[in-house]
Length: 458
View 1 (cartoon, one colour):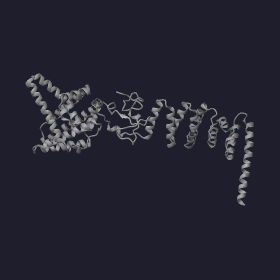
View 2: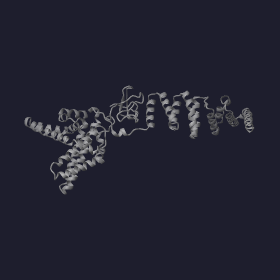
View 3: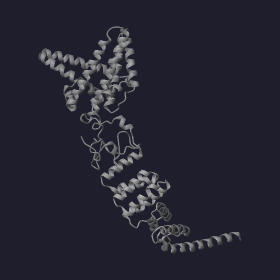
């Protein structure tokens, strides 16, 4: 059994022939653009080779409860009731019972076939509307050949050989049914060599299946005995329903054994439940990110998160993950660039509780860090000043006028600068030049505003 490269405890469901790695279902792209039998490699974008569900299927002996529930589905119950009614009519009309048996075995064989290919829901009863007589004749032929071969062995080789042969054909009967349902080849179904091949491929689990089937058949006999001969009509319907119910359960269980050991039997199938359980885009993104990070491709992970944030800028969790990655990998250029959008989003979404700590984390790596967008720099300084960090706020506003062209913004910045300096030791003297600059710039702005106003009045 192969295991996922990124989840060593998870059995592999796919293999990438280009990247040469095994992947579980979570490490593959199963978007709606792919059908139920294919997935895409997150790394090379190529189509992954499906390994089927042989490695991910739970052992059949743990599915006994689900097997009994399988036969209680709407379709299977309808089929069982139809067979029971036809069997009841068969008590009074000759040969009608053969129709019931043909319908039942066709439905049971279709249950086996469908389960073997990964569909864990009972099939539609319309699937058993035709072809049942052929299966019934094949089963009768199989039984007649078994009886005839037993008689021949007893005649030519003695009773011991005949008894051993009976034991073998009894043990091989489920294998014959599996071969007949999957391959639809009567010649293979009566071939002892093919029986041994299938039994050997499944291994000891085949004999566990035999024990379970024997226990179910014994239960049917016990229930028939308990019902007895009283109320013959009711007893007939009850007995038919019970025995047919167990038949559906047993054939479903045989189909699941084929499904579980599909890799050894040359079948590739995926469980229907897995196909329906497609993930959201966010879950696929997390899966791909996990692969890139485990491979050490931090740049690829960073680019992927940035691309996703450009589509969903309000994704707080993803923004935090990207910032943490940039901090951990000491990507100074990426950190300086991304922090602009990050802080702007924190202010927009009122996540003020994060701003101070994130700013300090960035300052640890970039001591002279200051946002390039002047309005954001002023906004960040205002927040730090409100939090009581007057020194950092003042450092952010230093030489603000040299980088900013907006005089009104400069006035706001240096008014804040004066407040910050006045709250620092010996800052009163340092604040005076800024106050003078603010007064002069404010006066200039008032003159400009006044001239524009007077010009408008004229």
